[in-house]
Length: 157
Image (cartoon, rainbow, N blue to C red; front, side, top):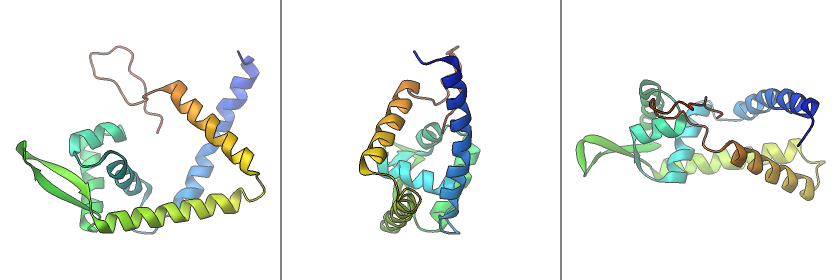
């Protein structure tokens, strides 16, 4: 197991990642804030879903999720259709326009990372990817647990 001082340094480094995330957020189009990008990404990754599932995946309140969904729906990036299984609910799904936005975001993110990490070797970038994936796996599902579970964690994303 790593020494205590190594965990202290890791905590400092993870806190500093906020600056990296803010810089990456600056490359987003003006009308696509990070929360909107998150909604689009989750719908792309998981497919159509109800708002309640999206709120759970985002680990945020339904009212906040509703605002994010309204923002992307107003731009035509998602559709809200009645759920055939429950007409009171709506299913959210990406539109072709939403997929185009995601492709643009991916290109911007990739270009920005390539620019900032241009002096890194492929092996270094690969190693970082492996370590970050391992870190996420070690933490598991960081979404808040149901109220009856006494091991509630705070969201990490």
